Amino acid sequence: SQFNIAVVVGSLRKDSFNRKMAAAIVKLGPPHFVFTQAEIGDLPLYNQDDDGQPGEQVQRLKAHIAGAQGLLFVTPEYNRSISGVLKNAIDHASRPYGQSVWAGKPAGVLGVSVGAAGTALAQQHLRNILGYLDVPTLGQPEAFIQVKDGLFDDAGGIGPASLGFLQAWMRQYVSWVEKHAAPL
Ligand code: FNR
Image 1 (cartoon, rainbow, N blue to C red):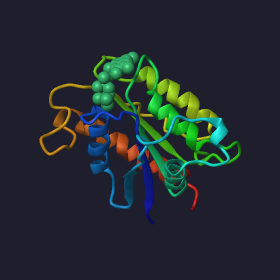
Image 2: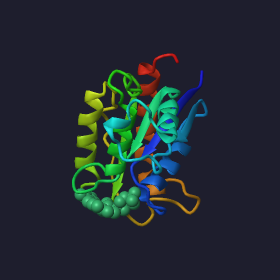
Image 3: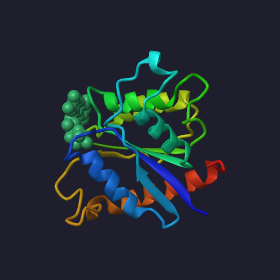
């Protein structure tokens, strides 16, 4: 059967390395995994006063996540945490209280940064959030990716230096989702 995966990218930058990584990693997925990027760039800032009448963009995000069997987060590290835009999206889809759409959806976490620590601290913060939201998150292998020449090939795929590692990551991710996904 098919698995719909919602991809959430934590950078809005046009030339984002994390967006490129999201586009490249999904090429390594099997045919029965269908990855679709969630739009989070047009969400308003979360305001609990709006819980009773969520905007169209918020409803769209929640419907997208609700329709997915699995999640893939690809996040930059901003000041040793996740970006505000990613946290904003997570908060939106977690509310109103009792109507979170995240719970129970198996997830993987990836991140690319220009720094040597490769988003390790951002990912640790994200795991903390996902734990609270009851999102079972793949623990191993961890993937802390630093931007280097050749990270991506000319066709927008993963370059040769990281290909084997990320193929192995994808195999583990696929079996994690297959094991934990609830039927829709
Ligand atoms: C950064 N960057 C960064 N890098 C890092 O490794 N650790 C960090 O804590 C931070 N902090 C940080 C804060 C802010 C506000 C910005 C804009 C950037 C650098 C970051 O890795 C780099 O800008 C990446 O290119 C961001 O990812 P995208 O946009 O390319 O996906």
